[in-house]
Image (tube, rainbow, N blue to C red; front, side, top):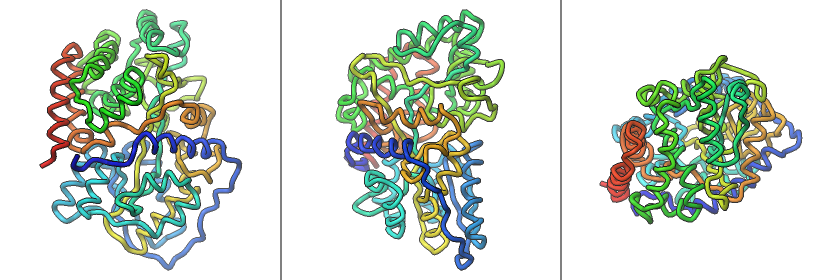
Length: 438
């Protein structure tokens, strides 16, 4: 279908786990930065999805680059979840930024098809040196290297407040049944179980995708990703019903339904990480600690467990995502920055700060700030099934646009989690329109 990202997601993702294992298990390889040069000069505009603490971490990476290239100025603009729309509008108007980071492979493919992006073949030797071949494949579109997957993520993690769990007398669950039972026990102890960042619709798609993967299985997941089965399929409705066990437990959502709809992702994290906590659990990827502005100690104040199994056969299933650096223009300053981002030195700057994982196998695992972070990165290695984020592979109008498509429809589901049939019908209508294209 038009504008589909056509790389085989299952093979790409399974291969990616090997690379992340290498990154996590690497020995103490030195992360020496490239030699400084004052010969390159210019300015770079960069629009990105990273905001808040993540934007601060990327700024630290930029600062590292500018120490090496003092005559190059990089201006990062944190756009957030509106990035697909902002970039599409800028391209249509002929004024895109010099660079951007994009989380949706499907959107990158659309931009490549429109000839809006510049290939970065000059960075291929650097990427090949520091990454396994699969990461070259992830950045390759129509046979050319267009991007570097700078930030990877294990999206099948659940984060919790250790003190809240201790007060309730519960431990990290392994199964969905245990998970729901623990949530009720936590609520009875005086703390709402769930902190839902419903103002950011992508958090809801991540929840659905993890449930669908563990309930319907990998084969169905890949079929739904490619829209080879409709969103009205019984497997989708079953997953929505399961998802409703959380969203429909309104008394156990911090702020209730209305509060959850208005809570952004960063706030949902801080609700759990602060002491005393406003809620006990936030369901999101390994980047959660890096987003928290309320800092605690890993293992003492907060912890992590894998997304619980629903069907035993899918116990070891992991969803991954990644943010890809792309360019809309080409000049020596941009080339220098792109090559720098492919080095272990660049990755190490963010990795030290937390909320980050990388496929750069030259960056040692010791760089990660704590055992919890190292554990979430290595979890991909233990997974029997690994898939790439579903919504990120779909047309932007359906999978990555604020207030519409999946993001908007799942927000509707948060408001009324009993409307399984109606939501499934809306999802199918939106998907059909997006895959058909203009």
